[in-house]
Image (cartoon, rainbow, N blue to C red):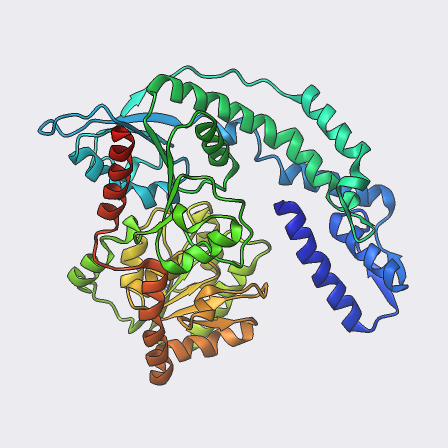
Length: 494
């Protein structure tokens, strides 16, 4: 579904550009790539002359290498069985026979749900955690993690079964992928082929190991950070549904109507704010399936903000924080370069670059060396984002939940939107928008020095925070735990 959705967006974008250009001849770099095939179809429909720049052998060979690189992450090791941990309960509390399995293979899922763990433990519930060893390091000072050994599945390829399935798709593609008399098979064949060959075996391997964990622990309920994506968690939730194991989702990030989502499956979804419900309803959820609670990971933000004092003394009057995203091309480097050039002419301002957890911080550290000054600093991936936001005067993002954290902490934001995708932050008035990098520096000046703009952003932030993160009273974790316990107890009574 995601592949087809992306294809349609590209197709419509290319069609609009070609029609508005008024061109009679269109040069296509590689007519054998999915994009090249799409452009060729559009040009043929419009009756335009087509000139291809790549010879057939080179074009096809290049696409083969690109696909091999694109899908190489979908190997067994990328979705290896996650470590299983038991978190001992408080010795002063009588242990319940209720077992809770938290399926949190990604750090942002773990961060969103972790604040509920102590509250469950304080009520005697047995907590089991599926997580990566590196992700739990920052929590080891708070809890003891006892590693549990479970039976591991053997990784076997599924080439025969998947080849048969792919053969069926190829044989019947015109009926399956026909849209307005256009055969979309040519456009998505490679993506589907490599996805089936690489991703599905890895997912099946993951599922086998998840089944082993469930059979060993026998949890009464399962909690996840997202029941739609990524695929590994989706498979786990489908298994829970099949085995009638109650499963709940705690929202881990921004869910918006601008992004494509699969139909929610969880028995109950605990969402941050009312605004989130629209996106989930559009994806197929119903009102009874959702409960607004706020976000557990934001429970401590206001307290930290109130306790915060800027002890660090430096010669900088203002700090810009850029939270990067793993986006295509070198957009993040262009942004850093633009700000770096600005800082050379502006005294008293520094830039801090916080790489996304999935990015390589050394990559950015190597890039900023050419500025040869100390007013640009790249942090480590695991640097505390809240401290960085508290120390910043303006936050620059592309698309990130950092925007919500900045709004809660009452910080002005700039959203760099070079892809022309809708941004909730911009639409809700809590961020200034940059659609062309030449506008970045003027917007930085507006965010830092324009009192009228600062006041408008601040007024919008109050409404935005309530709509997207609910009450900032530090009780989101309590609301979620109480709701889950109420559901458990109601099942026990029946």
